[in-house]
Length: 584
Image (cartoon, rainbow, N blue to C red; front, side):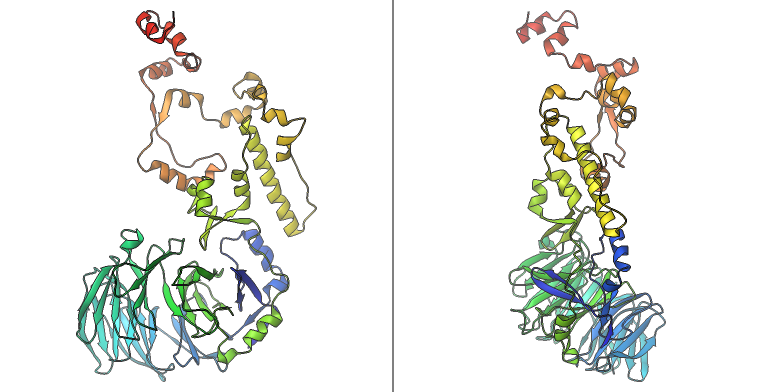
């Protein structure tokens, strides 16, 4: 084992410890200033690496372990290449270069001696121990590849309704399986009964029996999740009974099916809205029952398929996730990222360490950091019910909320600002005081983090709301500030210019289109906090009376504030109307 430094970074989620072996497990949405401060910390940068040179120059696309668990094979860029690592030596054995990027590959033997690569130029490259053996091309652009060890058939899913079959024993194409989907994204095969399943662009899953070479069933797998026009992006059969099938959608949901029913047993939402990239069934002696490990480009979630409860999750900071490799009956996994390094994670509760690195379990206890760096101090966890109660659902999908487990992390300053109930009198002044206090707290926190100076409180705080001397200003309406008065405008000329023009409010009404409210809440939520809006609004005149007043530059505000009786009396001969109002 190659070691750098002497500490391991560990995080605890739901009481489950996750050890980051080669990279720090920081969320991608952490404050950039805090990230930069951590990069300058020499103790934080110390790490332990399992395998030397486990990296690519630009990104890693796919990573797998051979069935005998003696080699790790990874593909990446740039240039397009594949690397084979020998675990007994904890180092790279060899690397090979390709003419085009590798989309996916399959291991055809117990070790690295037989490999099949699906490339971006529609080619399928077959490799042996000595190097490239043969290359052929498929009719359409390939998207996924699967191998049937019973019949030596290689299945290729492509941008076509046909599932291509290549028999490696005969060295020829076989008749393709025809599906009713416009194109296929993924293909999976059960190691128990041999059924082959295809996931299409139309959200359907169609199963084929290679023995009869025909379709045996088809369902719209994504529709029960409530999503329309979503695709199937991941498929995986369970390895025990063979009756269960997990389906991942492009909307970030995982649906668990029993092959004997057309309705899903369970639906799990990743809460990120990103396509599910990979699904794996996992079991070991350390964990109770089987676990489902589902991956999208943001996060790896480990959860119980029986109850749907999350065990833990991994959110790397090195880039978007492309693939995941999990050692069987173990708690060790490797992630392929859009970054140069391939991080390793060890979860003792999920399983023991593999045999080739059995000392990892003792090492985690010896080198674990005593004082862990907490990266969620400035965030508060809220469930979806809490968001609805606080009227914060409009911030879903913005930088203010981060999906996590069964809820969201929200910036604590924003939560404080919304959770605190403003007084009924002088609400604008109270809101400005609260905003300034939040800003001062943020600046003080940065000063303490960067150790640039002492903490100083500046300006008024929310304590003034309950102060004996000034509390009445926010309780008694007699102290209400008239922001339209000449005295106020003389003291606050800038504030007057930032307000919406009175003529716009007085003479015109905003036009609300069908989807405008939702789009504006979603796209301009960042500016709502600052009192601004980036979305242009359209207005229409209220009525002919207001149009005439606007043309003559006459204000109707004072007239509209009068009681209806006095307003009608000012119009002249309105006797019958006054009779209806009961006034003389």
